[in-house]
Image (cartoon, rainbow, N blue to C red; front, side, top):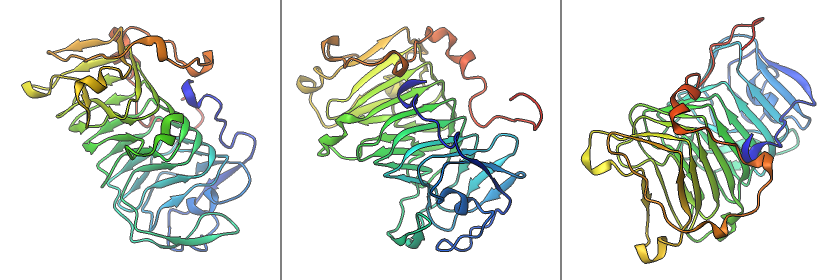
Length: 326
């Protein structure tokens, strides 16, 4: 559902089973490792033979037409580098625990069967999207990364982030990295059915330039603000629940950066059927006459915010059991 609705991942490909949790050779990865699977040229549905904890030596650079599916196992990516989707399309990430990601030193890293090259030092994002399209990130549990939990920049678009559980982090999600990159006007991202939980500070998300649909999420914690942006993003908030923190100076859900009110008053930020608790409030702006025409599949029909808590009860990585419905 949402802007990533065309994503099928590796549904048309073979099943690849990760049997080896190691990540010792990032130039010539070993068959059976996660890194070996994600660099293959053909579509693959990647699953895991058992519960495992994977510490990535360098960024995991994922090729197009892949599904990484952690259902049925407890799969943690922790303590090393994060996941990178750079100039790829049609990728699904599902049911993983990603936490305590660190910056990587950089060096020679393989990004496909036919190519490896030099990577500079990574910032420590949990999931980094760079020029990526048709992406679905679903039922992830994410916390405590060195930089962002999820960053989508450089014209990344057609993305749905859904059913995730986020905790213990400062800069949660960044969509559009620069005030000067007007090319990011093409960004269309759906943030739906997620639980923004304990000890979060800001950027849920923080947006520039594009069109962002924030629908039926449950915001139970923030220390600075929940939804922010600059450079005239369009933000449509529908059916969310916003529970304000005890801090009296952080009751406002929204924050607009680097612009006076005479400028941001023309940015379209709307709130419809949202629920506000403990003094939370959403400062709207703009008018609806510049909402783009979108397909029915791209826009999720929101339920009222009174349903948000119930709809996000099973956010995060699911505790699935093999052989039973998940």
